[in-house]
Amino acid sequence: MEKLPRSFYSRDAETVAKELLGQIFITRLPQGETRGLIVETEAYLGREDKAAHSFGGKKTQRNEVLYGPAGHAYIYLIYGLYHLFNIVVGEPGDPQAVLIRALEPLAGFEIMAKRRKTEQKKLLTSGPGRLSEAMGITRQLNGENLLGEPLFIAKGTDEPREIIAKPRIGIDYAQEWVDKPLRFYLANNSFISKP
DNA sequence: TGTCCGATTGGT
DNA sequence: CCAATCGGACAG
Image (cartoon, rainbow, N blue to C red; front, side, top):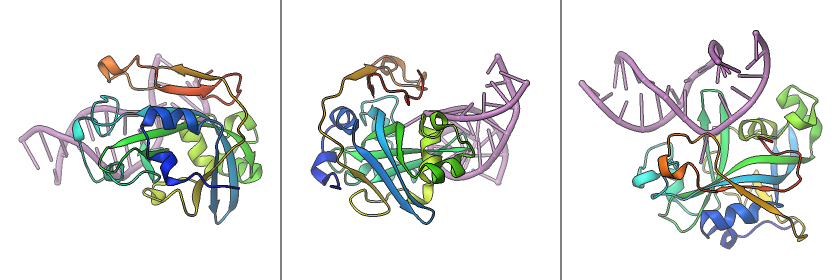
């Protein structure tokens, strides 16, 4: 089990978003260990990207971790109900991020089922809010270093995989950025958030 | 301090 | 289709 190094994250969001597909996201929290294969991501390009929280260089208490070093978690609450899990990427000071949108459950099924209050495998991690709940992600973990514990990403297998690129979800306000193909997912995977 | 709203989800 | 539910952004 090999953790992805800092250098993996210190690249542009589009590259990292694609290369995160097929890697393994692991959490080790008091309830136990859970693992999921990353099958869907979105790239948020930073200052220039009207869909990004850091558009125009905006820096607030919520998003300041985006301006720090790559390989840390950016976690925030959306709709007062769900936590979304992102990874800070790029060089320090360049506020880019990758949103993890779906996982394929690999281990810790019972822990996930208990947190999600469902036994249906398809409903455990197929969406950004769902996977955060299943993996035990809350904003207490905002800023955590993914090269340590309790959150990290391990190298998956090197098998070639077909990647599909499509527009991002839920960013209707982003004008000319709405249609840019910055959402990536593995072809033929059944755990994608919106089929 | 007051108001408005969201990188979603689940039930109608 | 629409309500749930609340921290944060921003205006005043």
